[in-house]
Length: 52
Length: 530
Image (cartoon, rainbow over all chains, first blue to last red; front, side, top):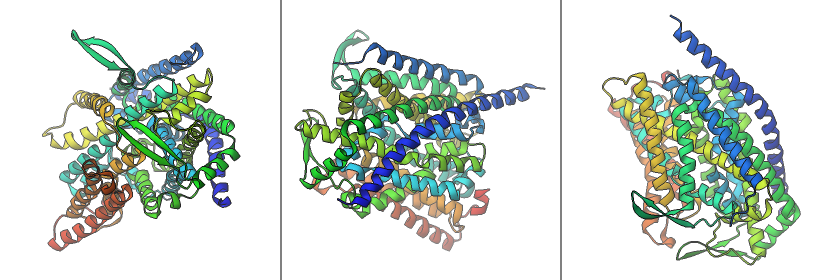
């Protein structure tokens, strides 16, 4: 068995689980705010277009 | 027989209703094709990360990456590591994506028109559509297989019904996937990219939770040291299982070197994957669609850097589920009749996921399937309208007619998927099929994009030669391998590598010939970038 390769894959798998877990909370919270900001920007733009 | 309990059904129903409501909510913000195709270019960093990650992980991704783990152990996750490096390098340097975003175009072929004229744009659009639709063609079948096996249902079960008074037999899988696609079609047709972004966000959350929980459970169930030692011992003894998923055709699946990708696949395959991953990061239209929807080039680069490590898990985590399936069925004495390397993983998950978790897993995979389908439907419809139909029109369509045309194209692609996707039988490894069909356009357009943006001698002759020659390798792979016996078939790595070599050779030789003839150049790389 090649211990370097096993160490590499072990680190990759466990780091992936940790990274997915972290992104779930980080992007989960901030992505929600992004949607609200995008919706506000699109509403504002629509309002500007309708103004004569 | 399914073992879904009420708690599982509640989780699935809440998720589905949430997605439909969110998708329909965004419909009111769509006022023109720009809003529909690129969300009015208002997408910010974290929403971009969620959308890109959700789109690039579908059930099809889970299935083929798990199959890689089943056949090749952890070596099968190497495309994920290469993909991570490619995304990181592009995200740091801005290679291709910064000039693409700054050009203010909606699709890659639109950029080519600035430099090479309408014909090259049209040809590039055609190649993108052929490669993209063939690639997407197997999504529904694999997604359906997964959902049936993980729910404990018989994937080949049928029921009798009637259509216009005629008695007909329907497969549960076909009916279920058609229904799922119909839901995706409704919100994608009405809300376009805006609906896709918001539903992608929900799907990212549900899918992420499902992937983390399932990965922890699989590692817990097998035990990490058992997994490592088991893989090595089985590889040493040349463990082989018989895949009987295709009727009248059984295939031996022998576990390759589980830790060393070069020993498992050979250098040619690894190099092909490395080049493909750089091409995917810079050229794959569904990925580039997020670059074009980003607020600015810096946001696009940040999305790439932030999403890069996601690619390791994209291959690595379902790969571990596939390894768990190999070890489980090996200890059970082999795969059951009718099961193969693709369907072993969901059947294994069905045995370890309990009530509630099974519902979460199914909701997560529905999320994965829906986000991928919606993103791909929208992207290919936009390319067909923008690059194939629009350049042929004598006068531009009205705003209403444009939106209607793109919406009808989304519907038409959906109909194509139902027929091609549910009837096509996959001849080999799913990942090889996806990589080769993707290469039909990846090789051509990657070479051309690099030439258009960074080599001022590139001209129309080189562009046409790159597109045509780059598509020949993968297309001949698909056609030849359908005709000749297995021992004479072209290896996927040879087809893929030759596609890139032919595309770059065509670009260089064609451009030099065009330059010698004193024609073909319609703009400079600097102008294209601006």
